Length: 232
Image (cartoon, rainbow, N blue to C red; front, side):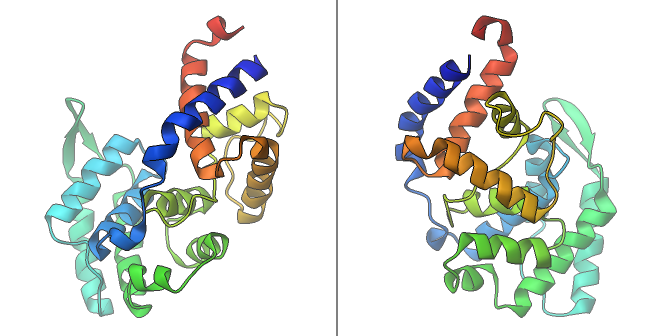
C-alpha cells in the first residue's frame, strides 16, 4: 500500500510540474497579494469555499488596501466585521463566517502593519529566504500560523521550497511511519520545520520541489481516503 501511494504521487508530480513552474508574485499587484493573505487568514478552521466567498466580498467593498492610520484601521475593521457577520451563499447554502470579530481585527491590523513596511510586494522583493519570511509572518502577521504562512507564500508564487502540512499530508506521513498517529495539527513553528524537513528528506529521491510534491500528496491522499478498501 505504501509503495502504491508513492507511485501515484510520483506519477502525478509529472502532471503538476508545468502548471506549477509559471507562478511568481512579481507579476501580481499589491491587491492580488493582499487578497491571498486575507484568504489564508479566513481559511483557517473554515472551508476554502467559504473563505473565498467572504474574501471576494471584502474585495468588492474595496477594502483590500493598505491602511495609513490607526483611526482608519478601526473603520476598516468595523466594515470587514459587518461583511463577515452577514451571510453568503455557498453551494446553495446560506453561510455565516465563524469568527467575524477576531478575523476582522486581524485583517485590519495586518493592512495597517504592512503599510508600515511599505507593503507586501516591497517587503517580499527585499527577501530571498522563504523560511525567514515565513518566520517573520508567524511572528508579525495576525491570524497566520506556519501552515497558513506556507499556503500564502506558495499561492503567490514566492517559494516552492516550503510544505503545506495539512491533514492529508500529515496522514501520508503517518502511513509512511514518519510521524506518530497522534499528530493532527502543528501550531509551533519549530515543530513545523522539523516535520517539514522529515518530509523533504524522505521524498528527496523524487527530485521535485516539496511545494510540488505536497500538492500531489494532497490529491492522492484524498482519493486514498475516499477509496481506502480498494488500495489494500
